[in-house]
Length: 543
Image 1: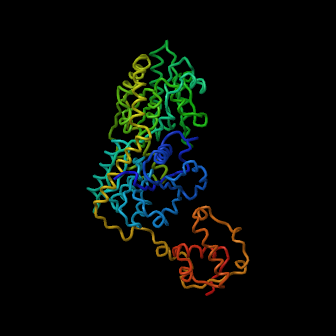
Image 2: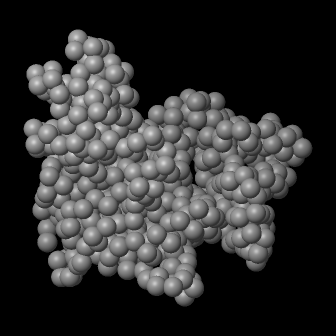
C-alpha cells in the first residue's frame, strides 16, 4: 500500500511546537520536531493534527495549515471525529498517551493501527500505570510502541516479559518498533566559527568544549564529572588556552547552576568557564558551532535518546559522550566522536522501594532519581584521555567533523525520521488488513452518574419540563460567562443559543423533545446545554 493513500490523525501538543523560541532540549523539543517533520515531509494524503482545546492561539499554526494538513481540537476528535473523519486509517501520538486514540478507535470499530512515541520510561507511575494498561487494554498486533533507541526497546521488552510472568491474564499484543528521532539539519549546520564566538562572547583563540542541555544533576547529568575532567585538561595542557561553555536551561527550584558555580571556584577553573542560559541564547546552532568539541556525560535513566549529540553532529562538531542508551545509537565511536564507558552497580532494592515509601509524590520522584544517579558512573580516566586526544589532534578533529555532518544528514535528518515512521506505518496497515478483530463493546470508564449519585440532591430526568425564567426571557446570550474550553468546542457552544430560541418560541421544553428537534447533536450535548441554561438562570425546572 502506498503511503500517499493514508489519512493520519496526529495527537500531540501543536501549539508549543514548531516555534522553537525558548525551548532548548528534551521532550518538548522532540515532540515539536516530530510534529513539524510529519507536517512538512510526510507523503500521506491528509494529516489531521490535534491541539489542546485550552490552547486557543490557533493563529500560530496558520503557516502550516494547507490542503494536506488540518488542525482540529482534541475535544472534537474524541467526540465527533467518527462522522467527520471516516476515512482515517492510522492514528499516531507524539506522546506516550495512547489511550485517547484507543478509545477513538474502539468507538469507530475500524482496524486502524495506533502508534505512539515513547519518550520516557523511568518514572514509577509509568511503570505501574503505562505498562499495566498496555497489557490489559485492547491494543492489538497491528499497534506499535515506537522506541527511540535500542536500549529503550530492550528495556521495554524486559518489563513486559516480567509483568506477563507475574500478572494473571496479562498479555502483550502491541508491537515494539525502533525509530530514531530526527533533527533539522538545515538549521543545525556548519557556520563560521569565529563569528559564532564573537556573537556569544566566547574567546576566538581558545579551544572550546561545549556542553548543552538541562542543568540538573538529578534529572539529567552530574556535571561535576565534566568540571573535574576539564580541570585535569587544563593541568595537562598548560600552553593551550582551553575554554568550557555550559549552556542550556535550568529546572526551576533546584538552582543546580549555583552548585556548579561553587564547583568552578573550588576547582579554580571559573576564569576558563562560562555559563549561558536559554534567555541569553538567540541561536542554538551558533553555540554548537562555537565549539571544537561537544561533550555530554549523561548518566540518568530518564534519558532515552538525546538530541544534543545529534545537533552537534549536524554542525560538524566531534562528540565525546557517555556510552548510555540513545547516545550509543547516534554517536559512532571513533568515527564521529567517542563513547565513554559507563557503569552501574546493583542498588535496586532501595531504589525500587523509594517509588512507594515517601508519602509526597514529588519526594518519591526526587529520591528515586537521586538514588539511581548515585549508582551510576562513567570512566573518568577514559573521559580525560579522549578529550585530551582531541585537544591535541587537529587532523582527527577535522576527520570526525566531516564524518559527523555526513552521518547526521544521511541518517538523522527530519526526512529520515519520517521515512522510517512511514515504513512502520505501512507494515502495520498491511497487518491490520489481514487480521480479524473483535472490538470492545465497552472500555473501562468511570460512570460518574452512577458512581457519584450520592453527591447531588437529585438527577435531572429527560422528561422533566423546563421553562423560561424572567431573566431568560430577555437575557443577551453573548454577555454570559463562558469557559474557554466550552468556547473551543465550536459546534456545541452554538447549541444553548438554539435551545434558548426554541423555548422562547414554545414556552417550555423537555430534554426528550430537544433530542428530536436537534438530531445533529448527541443526547449528552443536549443535556449539558440545558444544564448550562439552568446554571445561569435562563430556565427553571417547573416540576
